[in-house]
Image (cartoon, rainbow, N blue to C red):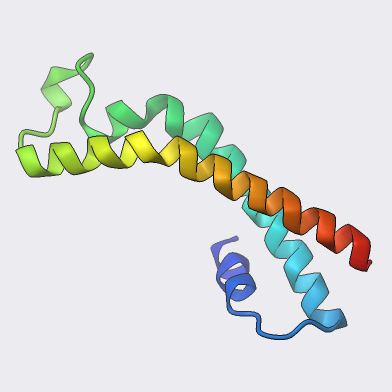
Length: 97
């Protein structure tokens, strides 16, 4: 999945084989968004060690704690923006194909 996403990002020109790569990349981005939204986000605080519910697994480095909190604060907005861009790309592909 990540290989197709990286390839999708590096595309410079569009032709028929490239459209197939873009469609695969869009599908993989949608799958990645589902995984992050359904698995990672609900458990993110615990996984990143910044949850108050599990103090035994908590990160004690203050800088690392702040960086992780900041990342989790902006992640939902970034995921929503990525989702909107993927939807827009999918609509454009529908017009091309």
